[in-house]
Length: 206
Ligand code: APR
Image 1 (cartoon, rainbow, N blue to C red):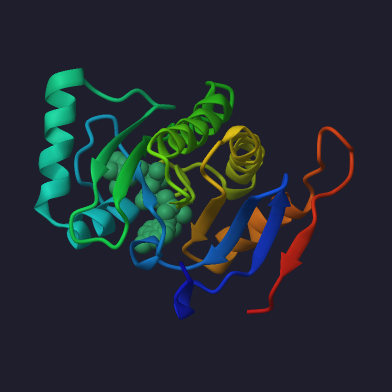
Image 2: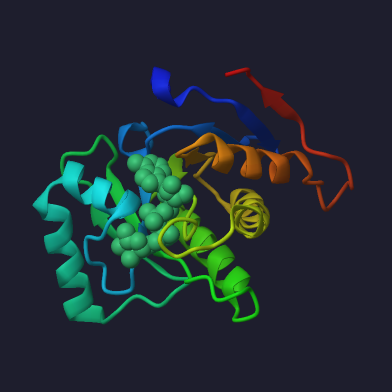
């Protein structure tokens, strides 16, 4: 699927033979991916931020499915994720990933943040999807600093892409330039753990 103009790719890392980790600035509710990830809370209630935007645009059906999940399975722990359909959104699914609230960095935040990225890619892979798009989970209302968040998110996504059987395109749709810059800095610094070499990077100017 071709990205729309607002979500022009700006930096891509080639992962393995067929994987791509793409970073760009944009609004995730307008981004064409098979699944988009919501930065959710444990109760899966419609909130503010990206969560509010997804529920508003996707329609009431998403919140109904969220309530059913919590009724049947209980709250979703930080680090985990749950799936609903995507209502009026272009995506097929919304994966509701619960990031940690930032408490200073020594309360297991980076493990929980990495875990919700990995869990979401695994869910998309089990659904046989090709593409999944993430916002910068936890970096808004939950207060996670952008540099530290990108340091947890990007290695987790590279690992998840390497392990995926079907998912081949993982996009990080970053809402503003400061988020893009922090995530792009971290992405440029990544090295292939097997070869010690940097990843092949393609960048387009904005
Ligand atoms: N597209 C992409 N990114 C967005 C969008 C959007 N339309 N709107 C906001 N963002 C960005 C924010 O700029 C921030 O960098 O998403 C990132 C995550 O911010 P939040 O939405 O505040 O999510 P989070 O910090 O994980 O807090 C989760 O907020 O909305 C509630 O229900 C949610 O309680 C949960 C909490």
